[in-house]
Length: 197
Image 1 (cartoon, rainbow, N blue to C red):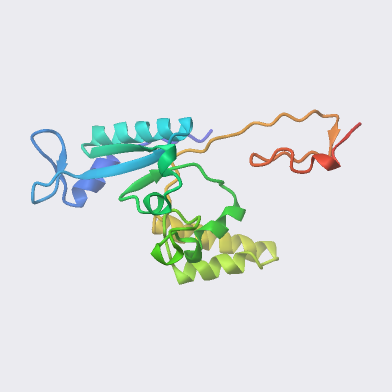
Image 2 (image 1 turned 60 degrees about the horizontal axis):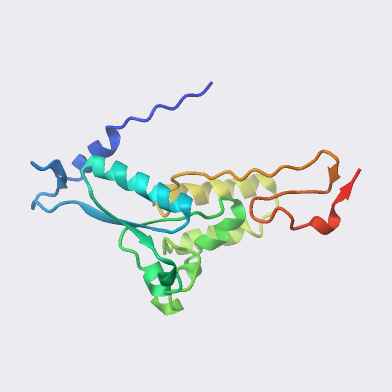
């Protein structure tokens, strides 16, 4: 059985390698004595908000000054506010290959697009766009999987998005039900094709 042990000292070592050191108050400070501070936002969705607070608590234990902000429903329609967060935004999104479309540069919510788009990280790279475009027109499985690997490698190395958790949605389907292909997004999308045996 595979067992992963997380080294809790590693994040602090990385921050120290960047020049941050603990001050007398226990907080991380740069060479000029400025406190390392970040904002993390989330929506009022229960899982998002709780995950955000857990991340904020962990970062505070590391020595960061953290400002957790729950975006109230009245602000969710403000596209510019939603797109211009200063540090981190914790939200849930689909974790499948179809979602790769949302990482194109053209999906970045920036001023030129009136802050509309699904690329919340606003990461833009013509090279990644070309890989994503090739991915959606490639049929041979070997080449297709190689493209996925290249896209994920760039996204991981550039840290355009950081996955914190995976929320599983369970769907129960009777063994007598035929043609049911439940998905987390739309469990009844093909209900017109279902049949009982």
